[in-house]
Length: 417
Image 1 (cartoon, rainbow, N blue to C red):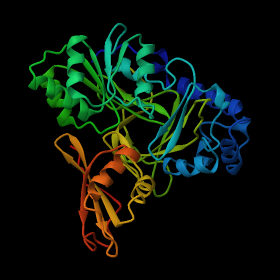
Image 2 (image 1 turned 135 degrees about the vertical axis):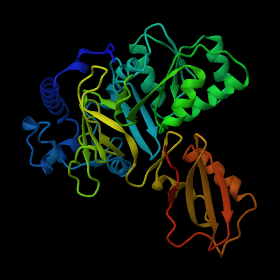
Image 3 (image 1 turned 90 degrees about the horizontal axis):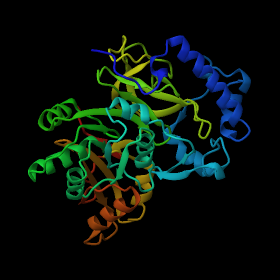
């Protein structure tokens, strides 16, 4: 395969060039944020590291910061747990993701670094792109829009839902690109086909959910589009992305990524799965050794596309307690707060399954033996989940003693091909 154009020359740097740039950038970031971010100072002190001596090779001495710990850290030291590297007044936007977790956005073009990923997906200046990621509270929609603006694309800020309107927009505006989750892409394309609507869609960039190869093959062959996937988090932005060769996910130069054994905390061997631990070379929010909770393995060998640098094979799943459903994280602590609104419920379990290409969520609520449950309890619980967790699902109210004593709070029964 011929080497494709890249968004920035750094995507073809040698290993030595990349390592030198990351070392220099890491020292610049630490020097700039040490006066502001007490959490970073404390982590470096715990590792007996002088800020001036920090290096990529020495990061292993810094304790891993788990994503699941962020809500508690932010409550203890509001609003950002001591990790904000600039004055709050210097931020462009502030978001609230499920957890709840607060996420800051700094200034500058393409702050979340999505332009390289979208360029690799085939989006070019002058394209009109439908962005169906959420714009409300969470940063997802804004993250990708920043990258599209850097590419000089025209953005249609649609957000999720309203399938018929999305199909109409795709057709009326002659939209070339789609941004969203794999499941919603399938929903929109199937709806367009059912309505006999002709689309000029050329490329799609999907994120926030697993992309199964069977779904990609079906949609590409049926609708004649190219589908590329990316990987990122609401805390860090874009971490890695796919190219035309589909030989893995290219790690962004501003991300120092480690894959660690969840049990030992040591780097995994080539090909073995490990937790993605990322250090963001970002002055605004300089998370050091951030444990994403995602599992991945390293891809081996050079990529035919011509890009250099490390690649992840793909995201394999999750470690820890949080589960991603329809692109949104479902946190046990958040569920606990939601269910506390319903004292009639003694125990509960969230069951996540897969129906076709869509995630399904079932809330099983076991009624307390000493309390009378209102007849509309399932409707009340459904409303609570929609308001607090921002996920809809089926609610099943069951008698006391129905759930096994060892039932997990979240049972993820999905399988991926």
